[in-house]
Image (cartoon, rainbow, N blue to C red; front, top):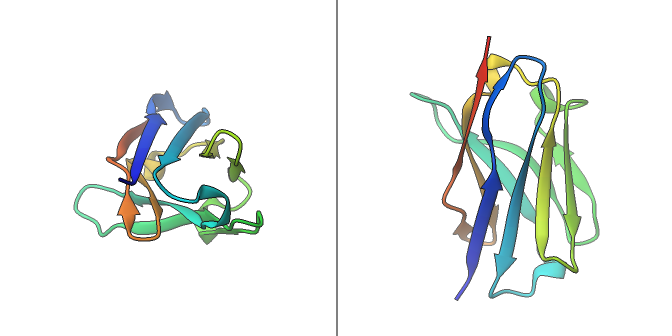
Length: 111
């Protein structure tokens, strides 16, 4: 059974930092691309960043230079380091791999 366990998130002021984690089990992790998505209230879920099994990364334009996605294959975990956070980054963040999704983690950035 595939399981994506998310941790991190919370409330932070504008300009602050947070790190999200996504631990993946039940799948051959090292070869899989893992992505982060987010969904703000009243908006559609949108792509944030992803990282391939080989470590190649892709980012949404609005987070480039502020967010960093990384992975530790030994820990079967993908991270999303979020710096210089803005109120518009407020959303529920989800990790995703293949057709599986995490449960979501709330990130709230106060102005």
